[in-house]
Amino acid sequence: MRITVLGSSAGGGFPQWNCNCHNCAGWRDGSVRAKARTQSSIFVQPSHGQDGVLFNASPDILEQIRTNPILQPSRALRDTAIAGVVLMDGQIDHATGLFMLRERGSPLPLWCTDPVEEDLSRGNPILRVLDHYCRVDRHRIGLEGEAFEVPGVPDLQFRAMPLSSKAAPYSPHREQSVPGDNIGMLISDRRSGLSAFYAPGLGEITPPVFDAMSGADAVLVDGTFWTDDEMIGLGLSRKTARDIGHLPQSGPGGMIEWLGRLPRHTRRLLIHINNTNPILDEDSGERAALGRHGIEVCEDHMTIEL
Ligand code: MLT
Ligand code: MN
Ligand code: ZN
Figure 1 (tube, helix red, strand yellow):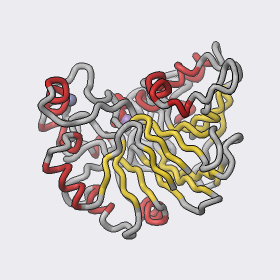
Figure 2: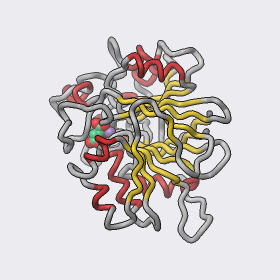
Figure 3: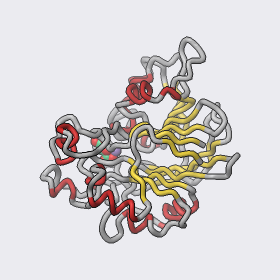
Figure 4: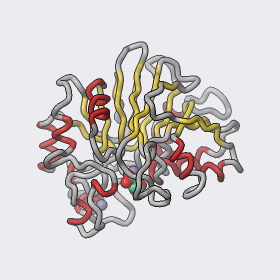
């Protein structure tokens, strides 16, 4: 399979429009060596074939399609390589790009869990609004590890698992998460036998999550924050990373520790990186520390071949 990172940033993108933190201001004035990033999404294709699955529909999707020509194979007057969309949660950064796909000539094939379907029908009724445009052909993602496939994308198989993270602020269960608010996805290629685990919003590594990560050849996991109190320290929020469903990288029980326990051959990548995270600064000590642990930082347009 080929995974193309369309957007490697958390909600807000990098630089964020209204932010003057060290990274955002430094990117603008050239004093920080860092790459701009769009909001959280990947595109996954089988090794043989053009059509693939879009994981998350970011508000930056039109720019992502423009700058990744593989998404527009131009086989007909109206065309797309997006055979289906899979949502990892119902947050703004992962779902509002669905509006931008409204010009489709047929209902949009969409896979999401029941709680996400509910949030996107009520709190933020994107799916109901799309009923007035292309409409949505919704498929339910189960949480019992059932495998599913996306028609038109041969050889790839998907299995979801519930994660401990957070629903969007407009969800009735923002403060009392229910299974399916956030999922991780095991993506397997039947031809190569290789697999990837994708979890852009991951608040806690439970035994089943660690098992899934250990069995994968590559993991693309939550890279939102370096420290638990990153936003508090900057005076930008009163909530910790864990409060909003993101496991920080540093410190005891942090992502670096967990990734260090994976089998040696596992490729380890961080994705969904917040604009405040020091790892965006390519000259930072934090970035160097990741390098020493064999952890890569995703950037837009990067591809991972498995
Ligand atoms: C999150 O994952 O916490 C989001 O990026 C928040 C948002 O999109 O506003
Ligand atoms: Mn997010
Ligand atoms: Zn910033």
